[in-house]
Image (cartoon, rainbow, N blue to C red):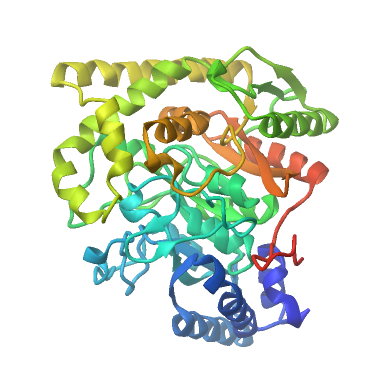
Length: 476
């Protein structure tokens, strides 16, 4: 077992540390060796925290030796996206301008994972300022490769964490998602990922100084974990859920709701909006639907999700309006070509006037109401995270057609972020040598229903990772 500690599930790693079967130092060293072996090929871990992680592991082992009770994630290493603060470490956002922006404190989700015994082992790569596109490439750290095929993007914007987890460099990853940034890289890299309900996890997404961002940034961005299995994802969810005085948005809703009567109804929409879906993605949705039927769910194909195109238009107008005043300054931080994705988006979607913005805020609430009614009838929705297999790196920044193709591909992620409901991405297998997967969306604050359904899919279709980026299909 000691030769392959990094291959173990997070739950098994923590149990072995708590039980004294292995030391936390041995567990961290196993992952550090794995990082040294594979990170040069994928470039997912950006700031390695080797000494800090070892020191934390030593403290964990001392606590166990003293008879103290250890947490549910004792000794488990996790990566943290470059946009999320780790105390004493620069939060660079992938731009050279912020390379010395040392965080004074852990962000709330990092603090919660630490309190459960987990150990941050490194920061992970992302597109510059989360704005340079879907492909994980930063001005400061360069490109991250998809471990299944370096000719395909790992997705983003939390692609570094997805790759780190998929290759065994960390048992868990902490990303964030405002329209697919956890779920798309989960699908492209063959791991599980959770975008929680708005307000489920406490967070702090301020960049510089004490001022908070505007309403779109406050309500759309949610932190979310990656794991190689749904069971580990559930463990991370239980740790991350809750309130924190630093985030008044986080609400004290129980992590598990009341059981629903009878078989849970699942709406299936393989092609949201009817804009097209790749055959392998449609097959992934069909395979997940069959797995849920076998598990006793009441699975029904429905014509479509509520008000998709209207929601996409409102999402674009609101976010561009909030972002436009700072764009002249921000674009200078993105590096050569890094501004193309947002520039094309702003050309396509002009900012709203004050009167238009007020009307859009009402539209936002009205669309959320339509989705609440839809999910009242169907507590779960099954569909794609991205409507194509992994695409080539930088497609979204190449030209207008590429930008529109990527925007269309992640449309179900965009609308579900807009209405604030949870979604779990879960793999369904391989198609042409690349991971395929689906997302399971649920009612607000019913992540438990999404996780249970995702577990049923995993039980039927299996786990894909860890994967070896050197060319083998898998190593564990």
